[in-house]
Image (cartoon, rainbow, N blue to C red; front, side):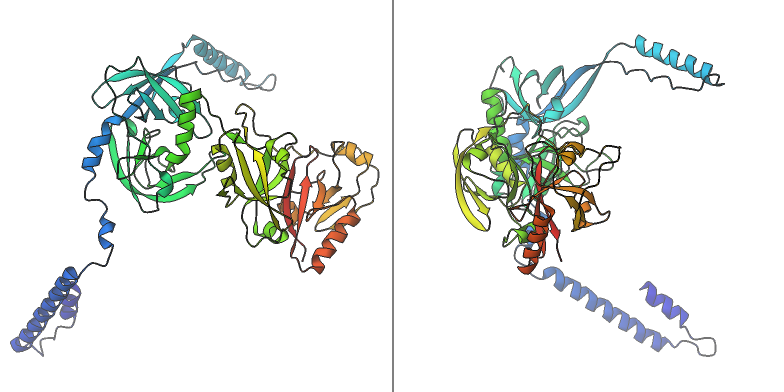
Length: 519
């Protein structure tokens, strides 16, 4: 109406043409009629039937009944630890005779004395957890109780019980606690549900201790599944928009039946508060870990002894795969279960113990969840053909760090003797000689074509190929000379291939695969 009024005012006749009452009356009637039509249309839209499923957009009418049954099983975890005083800042080196030399010496000397006078101090932190057993077993995040001297579980009724750490798992970020002494009466406990049946859009509830406020409930949906947030080798998080804040760590994520289907662990937030992107460890990932911690006080993960990498579309084309799937075996531990079962570098694992291996990330998770000493079947694709192998799963040594690729040694600064080289795919290469083995510190047992240089900006450089690497195979055919490389690439071009699959080893013998375009 404002726009209409403004237009009417602007278009009002001047004194020479006075407005006629009749004309104004007609305008008023037309405006009134238009208003009635608009009101009628709005009423009809409100009364129109909702499409099927539209009511679900509102979410559950209430979660109060379910919350009343489970709130008492959620606890606040408080910890305390002794922290040593901060170390003094070293005195900066100044040129002798500098006008600031005396001033800085006196300033930093005073700071050092203050630091020595400080006594160790006690710090505390807060998190969440939940009771899974009436006897007092509590699940939380490992980072909630890491380095703690004392841990307490604070219950909704005001009870505060001391808790001991039964076991912890740093890779999944879980910890199992046990209240001590045993509680006078059975504690309220909750059960794990099946996280595998969750769908994106299913409603969930998070209960915890955000910012130390005590039992707080928030509601949201499952936003995504199988999230990898680069926090560890077994990332498989549920993502939710239910508000999760600091202090919620270790708290439960419930389904609408009051079953724990996740353990709230991390959030993405530039401010420290919830922006609707939270992550929880799925219950089906946590269940076997919690059981192992309860029985053994430690985890006992499966292990087969392989290094794997992602099957890219280029690698899939090089291996004649119908799609980029499975996990590509880069190398095999000589004495590991995989080697004993017949797995070889270049195999693509597409099934393990009857479970599909969709991509590289899936295999470590499946293997880790497989019981130690179990005999399993492994389906691999080798040179375009499916094969089924059998192996016995070993136990992962949690104390052994994962081996990392060795750094490529730099050539010696003194001028090396001339070497006959050839160039292909942006790589300058040469046949192995004792001098090259010594120059690049290549292990004696390694064989292949030595990479002498790589063109800057080439695909080979982008894929990490560097001087001192060895081209061991091309499309699973051994290469010992630059001529072998040229022949393999020429044969692939004749076959109409668009890329060549190189098995590349570093001087320490760590092997990986990479595909380079040959067109």
